[in-house]
Image 1 (cartoon, one colour):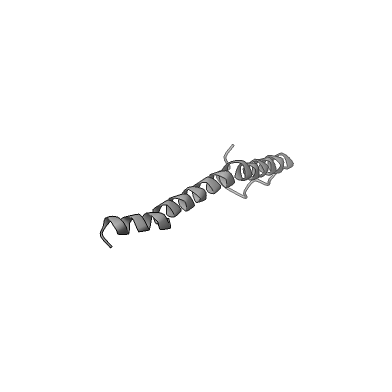
Image 2 (image 1 turned 120 degrees about the vertical axis):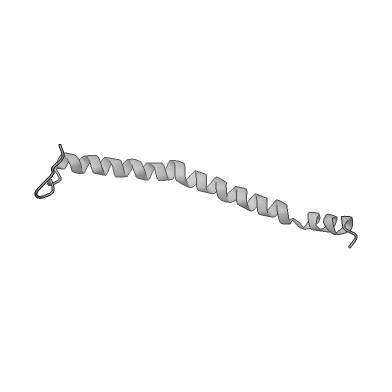
Length: 67
């Protein structure tokens, strides 16, 4: 129930347990979802930059352009 006026409701032990459980689930999601996703994104960026700037390709472009 919402409290419209007065002091805020004091947190009960049940509320504290629920909040603690929610924090535990959030930490678990960080290790199972966020970190692998960030790893994949960083690897894709590294591979893209490597492919775009690899030395062999620069020599081929120089030959094709007449340098």
